[in-house]
Image 1 (cartoon, one colour):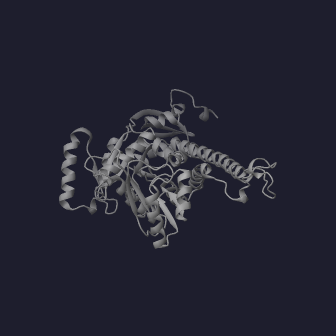
Image 2 (spheres, rainbow, N blue to C red):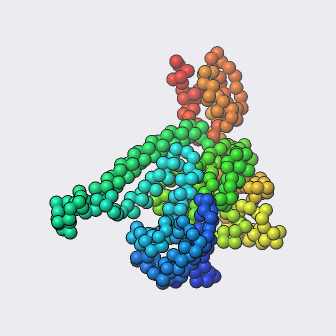
Image 3 (spheres, rainbow, N blue to C red):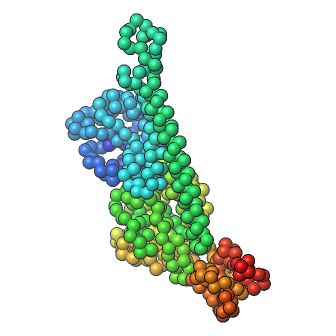
Length: 441
């Protein structure tokens, strides 16, 4: 594992030179363990600027090669993105396979993707990453030109059609990318249809977001009594899960558990998972979940806010949830409570919870209920055919029936229903002021 720190990069206040790079390297170690790797050694270097050819310079590259031989390592992982030239040069000197941070994250996503949508998105990101890194080498790639021109003149058996195999590989990748994009577009349409079906019974949506391994899935299970897979490894949860939840005011909402974020999340991966992250973009309320037991949780929160800005939802209504308070000492918890009380004068402050023990869940539900956009009740007098069982059930489930009686094949209701239901289900068709087309039939 190779990490780098830059002397000229803007660093956070209070952090010594290179400390950010070391923290990123520690995170890379956890990522590698999530991918199933065994860490043999770590190397860290502080530089003024990256070396264009080898990123780390020839001297440090010789040190990396010696460590690789000493530990009989089969793979070298760099904690930054490598250009195709840098990756090739490092492999030639170290005689070992080399990958960078982006490739490692893509591999983890490929391991954990379970749905068809997730698998397509990961493959698309992998192919887009691989395409500019294809190179031609050896006689099998037919790198020499034909017609005996140039250096091939007079050399029998070396004439070839040019970089035919390399061009063929690139064309095959581009064709596969086009097919995957079409498949993802079909998946996006299917998701839109499912979302439209959910909106036919208008329920507010709440999305859980946060840094990877912040305990979102554990909190999601505590809120919704779902059985989402929980693991301490990074990116253990990849595919989104949606469950219905009833708030203290008896309102029903939908809660979604999304993929965890990470610093320097590869742009191609963020773009590829646009369909998955649409659940965040469609949410009326966002729960920003942080691991309060992590001493650097404030820094990680800034990384999550940066991704939310990239998604265009930074101005969305949010609740800050500090998870894993069961890992804090009593004096640490009291200090956070006092800080939250000082902040509560402006925005209510963060909410301390433990998804593992259930501490603070009731308070979180009350805050969610208070922050969700209101859906005022509208009084209506309705005349609904008895055959409209779905509409009748919807009114009884989400509204309040004040008076009802049966008139032949119709139900006459005086009820109060949420404004969204009156608007989206066109209940005005059943009001006594007009004649219902369905009742007329």
